[in-house]
Amino acid sequence: MAKKELKVEGIHETWNLYSHGVVANNFLFISGQVALDEKGSVVGKGDIEVQTEQVIRNLEKILKTANATFEDVVKITVNLVNFADRQGFHKVRKKYFDKSLPASTLVMVRSLIDKDLLVEVEAIAYLKPSDARKQLQTHS
Image 1 (cartoon, one colour):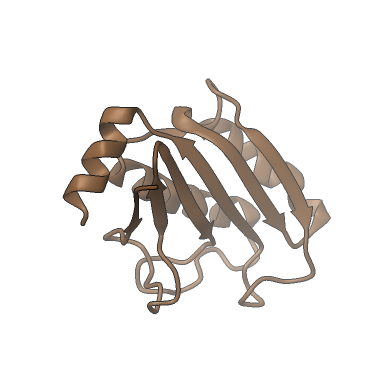
Image 2: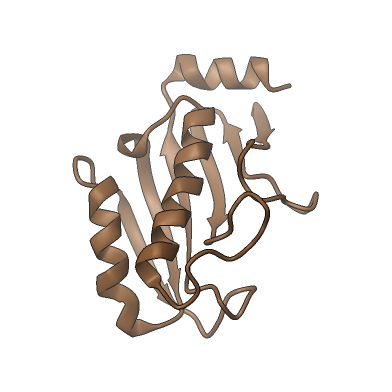
């Protein structure tokens, strides 16, 4: 199986522990994204909508690196700290996932890696075979 790790400009550091995303065959697997700006600072402390917007921006940057869009996303997994934040999360989510609805899992968790983070989203996107080949060739 052909696979390539992606490190994306304009997103927080990964500290050489993981990749922002991995292209494997025709899929893009995106690591869980949280509300960190490119400097690694938490955005929108206490505000689920602001944090969700940051998470979505991070996802979008990774998707664009692989020439993909939200319409190419086939599965997302959402980790949410506060049950009461579901509506705020979904309000923002609907702005980006309005034309093509991915399969989805929502998990309630006690906390994320930083006490100020409220949401984490990981995603899987299907890439056109030509885009997947290009990624595997140009990012080696």
